[in-house]
Length: 278
Image (cartoon, rainbow, N blue to C red):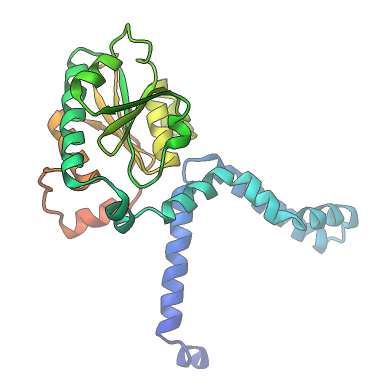
């Protein structure tokens, strides 16, 4: 023991910390998804393989060993959505968003117009779903809708989501300060825990935030509440002022003063947030 402690250096401590962070982030990413059940199933197969080897169950041992011969391919197939989401988030960050994201004036314009239309639609209880692109491109989803190329404005967004509009049921995609598509279909959330208490519009908002780093604004036509989906979490906002502040934090450059963040509030932001019912 003393010999092991004698050779233990700062590199070993750094290695342990990095591995702990990676494992923690994996568990956070898999929490509430079907991947947890798959991990339990893989653990059961590993336990069965050890038992078969210990008890000399040759037929069972042969079957399990042949399974593990292509376990890498099996893991890629089983965890394809989670792996794709993890790889996509590696390329997301403040530097990339600053280099390729919209300018401060464009961000401020988008925040001002989207907050205005969300407040107006919520007051009239008209459902809406607006998706604001950040670092991850959304072309594959936007191509499923009706292509547009118009400057973001509250009047145009309001007319799209009117009940008699042919595009009101789909989502609107916003790239920089342009509305690129409307009437788009989004992937529904894979998280079964909050999904049962949500409608299709809110599940779609949560689903696009799970797949990408986009910010989705959903207005409920039943309650008139405004919800914000980001990073796989749904937030129910009290009013338009809260929406304006949150968009100012998420879409950098908007003129929304950020509240001072204490040490413990910063720590709480790093922890998984509970899903709010929408």
